[in-house]
Image (cartoon, rainbow, N blue to C red; front, side, top):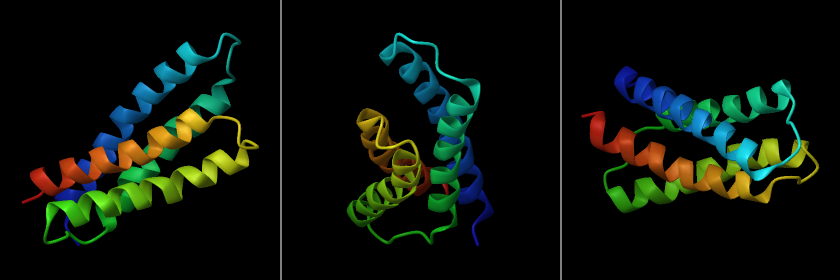
Length: 109
């Protein structure tokens, strides 16, 4: 288990989660509940953890595809629990999976 990879995944997920909260507040004119925003942020941290726990791929293209799949898988749990409310947030989870995997791939050597 690569502890550096896990740390990078968690840190990237936490930072992207903050970006997600800001984006969600900008997209919706009504006030979103704090518990919803926390769950949104936590979902991104969970994406980072799952990607960090995955073993390193030998090639970057395969790693990025895996990041998209893991991002989609984890984001779908949140997306479906909200009654399929925020498609943009679900798609962002896929993109964030790719970003987190890229960071983990490049920085966890």
